[in-house]
Amino acid sequence: MSILSGEKWEAPDRQFIGHRDCMVRNMSRYNFIAPHVSGRCLDIGCGRGYGFNYLKAHCSSCTGLDVSDSFLQEARAEFPEISFVQHNAEQLPFADASFDTITSFEVIEHIADDNAFLSEIVRVATPGALVAISTPNRLVVSGGRSEPLNQFHVREYVAEEFRSLLVKHFAELTLYGQDDGNSSSKGTNALINRIPLRIKHLIPFYVQDVIGVMLRPPLKMEDCRFIPDSFDHAHTIYALCRTAR
Image 1 (tube, rainbow, N blue to C red):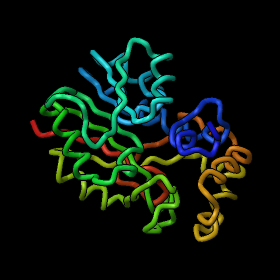
Image 2 (cartoon, rainbow, N blue to C red):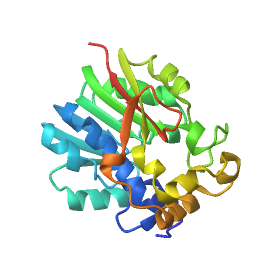
Image 3 (cartoon, rainbow, N blue to C red):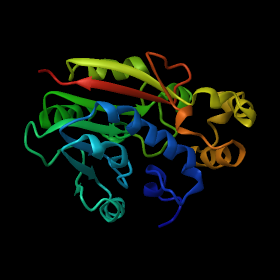
């Protein structure tokens, strides 16, 4: 597989230097929610399945869903005890009220009909189920542009747009901004962050990833913060939701 293929860029890969910090950010999303999950768990867009390192100890059963066969081959090899399903996320192949916990990180921005996607999540969730969803913050990752810089994204959201979308589907909702905390003020990070957005965002996102890894110290899990209703510097909007009871 070419390192510039869509799949290579769209899920963390331990062997690819350009995703070093991406992996840490992604794993921190699972680590943040892990103490609160329970029962039957579904991870939509599970990729290579790394999130189950954090989820599986807290759940009675785990299911991963992804559209990529190559990702799922890796996931099945590493987590033979977990059920993995290859399918798109727009029409989930599960019965109503099948899951008590549902996670879906960095998926909704790829979905053509976001409302239909959320309706499917609610359909397969039990009453009062915990649902965790994240998506890139358009103000940070695309400099506020209406057209995403990431060619694989259908759309991106600012926090209030994301909130307005989610409240139509969930009975309870808390939004967090995920940022890199104190790491943003260390060494070359401070220099990178001072580059004006109008210039920085002319650089393809995957080039930014590689340059960032070359110049910055490694991001650590403890650097990743989730702050309620704080989005000015957040690269990711993270939602914790509950379905109606």
